Length: 178
Image 1 (spheres, rainbow, N blue to C red):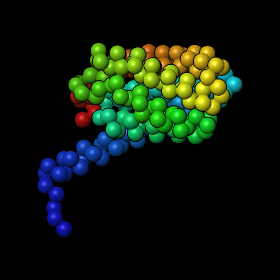
Image 2: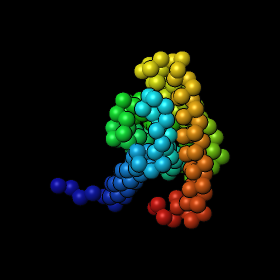
Image 3: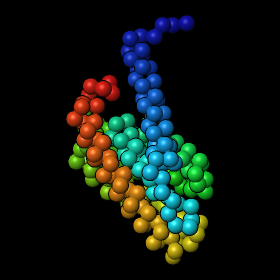
Image 4: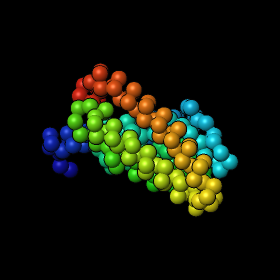
């Protein structure tokens, strides 16, 4: 059995930290989606929530594969607990909304990540419109899906900026999350 080099030990420790942060963000996403500020809307089993706030924070904090995993796992678990019909679409959509964000740099709230909020809304609204259209028909789904997406994504975007700014002020990425 060979001993790990110092470089391998650091790499292993970094991987463990990232996996742990991913699990925490997935758990927070599940809680914020399924139980905290969970408001059912429409007749199709959909709901608005602030779980996307946690996904946006994960995407601004974690490298992309980890952020995608946190979003997919957290959102998917929330749907399995509250509205299972949405879980397959949610798993895909929550991974995709991470793509516009960047975890590079020392801040969570950056110009790129603020622009990413609008792109994440477009991805989410389009994804859920398509999913709802397939399940319930495209005509009726336009109004329920888009209006729900505006409230959900808008509220989550505002909370991301508020929480992200507070975390940036205490040096979360540079001091606390090392």
